[in-house]
Length: 171
Image 1 (tube, rainbow, N blue to C red):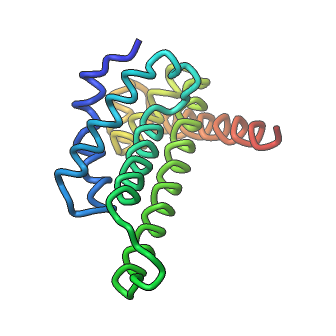
Image 2: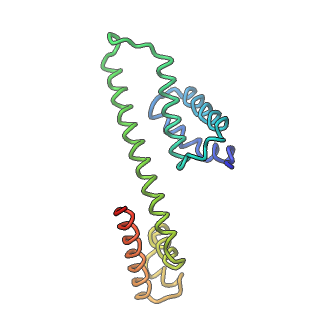
């Protein structure tokens, strides 16, 4: 079961920043975010099919803002000018940015799954080196092994990750 309060407070700032890429109307962004969470709560029984809730929130917010634009603006072809075309182009850029963000999130989730397949020591060394950005000398002290053992363990960990990635790509 999803803790909606925790999810709301965890995502509100990121969603608001995302909404500002579409409009400068802060109140409309707040209303749209509220609508997204109300819809999310009312349809909570259908959320089992959602694999990435964060992406779902971003896409829902984007769609809700677009709905609001459609509802509020009644442009005909003769009213479209350069400023409207600029806004349209900016929105297209934002969609591309959202898609690249979603792709990056999917890649990150895939890498996390690969790392979970490593042994605890391999996970620890990957975390220390890449996440905490520790030097090999620091890792030696933390893990209580010599320098060459750290290098060997890192090498074997990366080999296993590459192997897992290549198996996944072949499927």
